[in-house]
Image 1: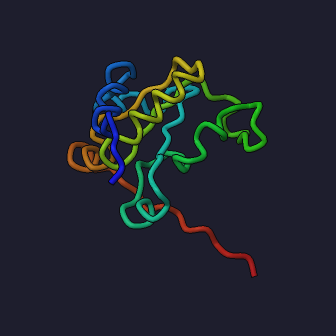
Image 2 (image 1 turned 90 degrees about the vertical axis):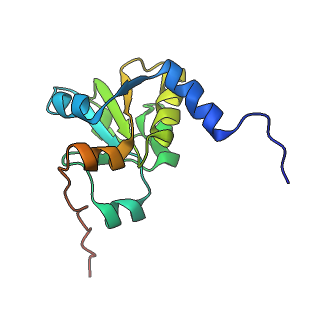
Length: 137
């Protein structure tokens, strides 16, 4: 068995000490802000199964840092006009770690949603199906 000195729960707790954490209600109040992008970090299978918060943009967790960095060959132009980001996942752990990573890249206008999609579903309930891509024949 691998021996680790800090658990994933330790890492998430440390991240939550340094990142801005918003409740679903606080996120709801910020939707529509100019320059704000709400990012869904969940796996594509989670989006297909559970839907998403309306207006959110799917960014696979493994690509986040690459897609937002203008010097990366994977940079996405959808971030050209971004001024702030709010990240969410299913329960809030992945988004806390991801927000901390973006802070380490120098981004100070990033937050994450406490409790993730699960808490959003319970407290807000506004969810839309993830749009399926149409295959080209």
